[in-house]
Length: 170
Image (cartoon, rainbow, N blue to C red; front, side):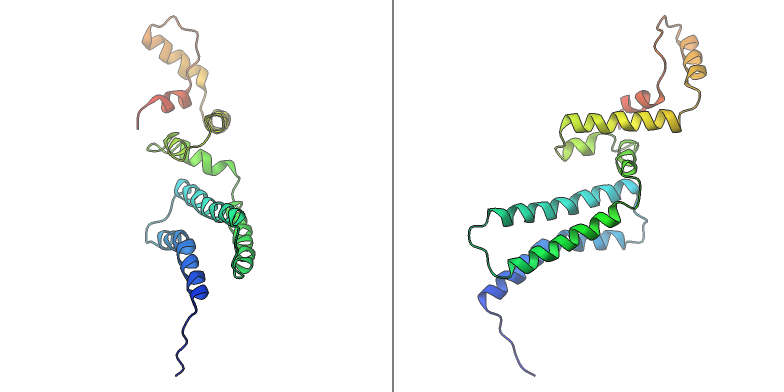
């Protein structure tokens, strides 16, 4: 048996790969768990992995001295990005955001904790509301009338099940 000793630059390469691949290892472990991951968890997972790749790409761009092995890693990261995007796009893109917004313990909270731009959060919210009211909400006029009668309210505002849901605390 021949013993191979790694050079310092090879140890740097190994250290980088271990740190970079850690989120992917955690994701693999999560997805192999006995519980079935939900669509909302899948979106959160994809976002975390895309962010990990983006962070490394940004780090590479700022490097003034680039070890020789970086070129190979950049190529591999590009292929990872493409494969992750293939897996991500199996569903209609809006399904992930809808799953988080319609999850009772998430709603808009997850987007805010990820520091998403408030305009983008509002776009997700409005598009989810539009799809919900078009595809899932029942006859809101009958429900609105029943609620207005029971409230003895003078309001002409139509009841929105989506807005009512979003208004409830998690």
